[in-house]
Length: 114
Length: 113
Image 1 (tube, one colour):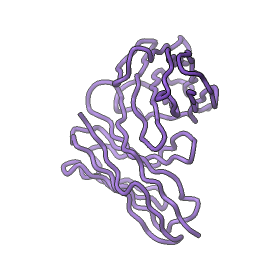
Image 2 (tube, chains in turn red, green):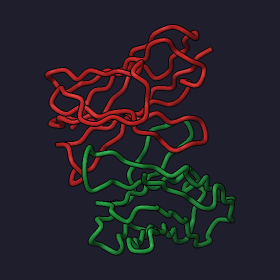
Image 3 (cartoon, rainbow over the protein chains, first blue to last red):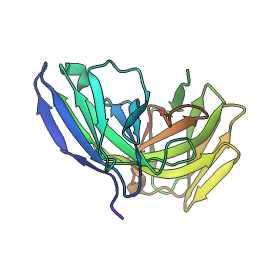
Image 4 (cartoon, chains in turn purple, cyan):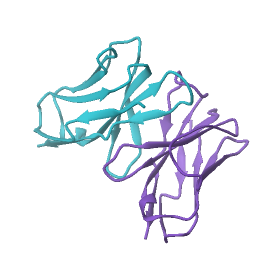
């Protein structure tokens, strides 16, 4: 069974640019959540996708958007990058949505905005 | 709004010691609480998950307890080893809504040989 994978591992972008991060969920999982972890902080919930629909959003501006595909892989898109967007972006998948189901995290994508 | 606090922010102990990491949360209406380990620059590894109806969980040298009414959890590590050096994060999951985990800031643990 393949775990959660994310690509790319590292990324460097310039302020104002746009970026797309990708996540492949664990086999059989239909729910993907994205988190942002700034240096020295705990992860912050960005949003969750369940069966291709957004299913909850944290306190992030609309320039953070996402997609989930029919195979349940997911993308996180960030427009108009700011320096404060520099962080480790984590995705997590679960079998279904809801607190009953444990989330399994990927290795993360390290985004640096200069 | 749920807030999770971890104390201490950093801890350094000699190898072989038993130690306790603390986690507190402001809203007792949680579904479960999870402890994670994170190595530098890496993703999260789940260590223990405690359902709200449970009081503790054990895995090897790790024991996590949960007191929902007081909003507290502890992670006990027995006979610490240098390989235990990492950041330990606790997170709570609410009862309703999306499956959002609310994390503490973590405790950075260093075990000295």
